[in-house]
Amino acid sequence: MLGYPCILSSMSNILAFPVPSLDKKVDEMTPPTFLFSTFEDQLVPIENTILFMQALNEKNIPFESHIFQRGTHGLSLGKSLTSSGLKSFVDYDFAKWFDLGISWLHKIIGDYQANRDS
Image (cartoon, rainbow, N blue to C red; front, side):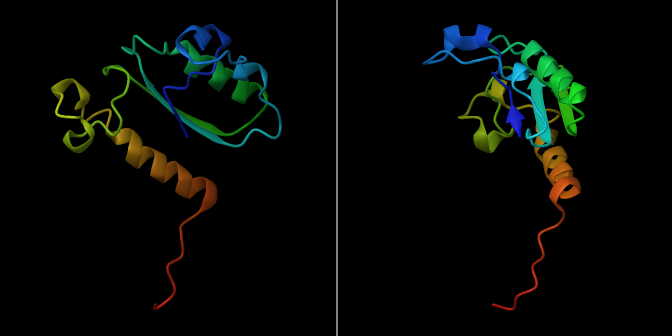
């Protein structure tokens, strides 16, 4: 699961060290991937998400992606509990990424079987 994926070498200027463009590294060993980001993110442009999606598609790697229109970078879960008290970090539409991600994981790896008594 990649939130606001910072995967392009052009992002190295905001990171502590240079990174390769990971969209160029996608191969048959790349796992299925869930991506989410926001169109309004001014720190990590959605090109990171779009190019990774294209690379996954070219290699026939299953993925699911959600690009929400609204939201600043770092919304976390998009709920009051994780907002550090900032209204700008609360967005209930964006918060749906978590449930969407859990649903996707169930499709990929199945349900966790709770079958023990203790």
